[in-house]
Image 1 (tube, each protein chain N blue to C red):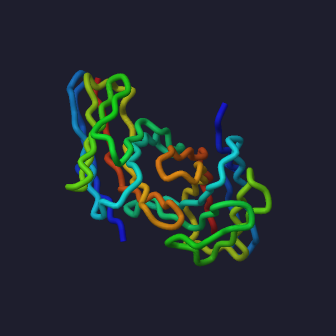
Image 2: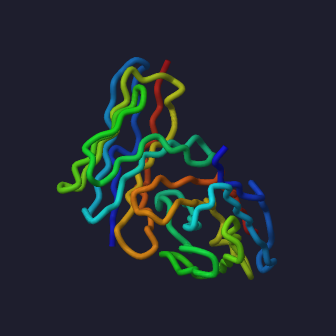
Image 3: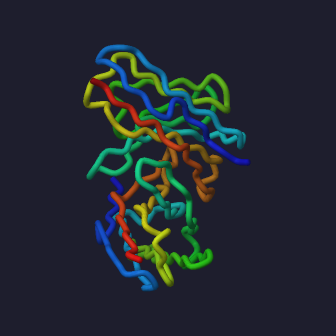
Length: 113
Length: 113
C-alpha cells in the first residue's frame, strides 16, 4: 500500500529542546516536502526536496532544518523549538512530474510549551 | 505568488442535499488541482486530481470541475450524507521550481441527519 508515514503523531515538548519529526514514503518518489497547518492560514510549505541531497526553502522555513540522505526519508528538525512552532505538520511526497498526485502523511500534532 | 481562496468557509446542509464547494486561484500557471478531505485532527485524504488540461473528474458522488483560464474549480457532492462531514481543501500545484502546492483554507462541511 502506497503511504507516507510520519512519527510521532503527537508530541509535547518544551521550548529549546531539539526534536526531529520523521517522514518516510514507500513509493520511490523523488519529491518530498513539509507543510504546517495553522487555523485561518491553511497549509504552508516549510521545506521541499527534489531528490537525495537536494533541498530548498518553502514559504516559512525559519526555525526548521531538513535533510535528505536517503530517497525514502525526509526528517524535519527543530533545533530550538519555540511556542510559535506549535502546529499540525504534514509530510508529502510525489513524483517530480508536475501532473502527478501528492500523497500526505497523517500529520504530527506538535505543542511547544 | 499563488493565492487560493475557498468559499464558503463553512456550510451546513440537511442530509440528501446536493452541494457545491468553490475554489479560486490567482495564477493560472498550474500543473493540476487536487481536492482533499480532512477529518478533525487527521491527515489529508485525496479525493480527486484534475490535470490542467482537463475540465472535470468524477469519483462516485463527487465531481470536480476546473476552469483554468478563470482560475476556478468546484467540487460537487451529490446526495450528501452525514459521513461527508469534514473539511474540504483544494490545492493547486504551481508550475515553478519545487512543484509547490498552494492550499486554500478549506470549507468546513456539516451534513445534518
